[in-house]
Image (cartoon, rainbow, N blue to C red):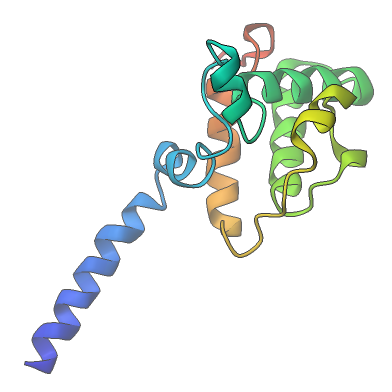
Length: 142
């Protein structure tokens, strides 16, 4: 009986861990609760927002990194933005942010996600966020 329970537990763990290797599912489980995909459609939706919607956040980060770091091409910009996201997830601060002050006035600082998202999940989701939500002018052609 114990052997059967151990085997069942192993398979459940295996099934659940597959979700943690899918960046879209990581985003849905760990990021979407605060960073909506789309802009709010009305004032009520805007009042309920916990953080800027992801395309606005990515616009701020992409333009900010481009202006300050001056990457030579979009591939280098992508790398820099991904590194920024991976760091910011665990060590957010207004000093590291590229958002305008009005964003901080409305939403305050993002909390650190240490203990909520793993380093591996951050490394999987950050490139996915860039590839799906960065402004079109910064997309990297494969």
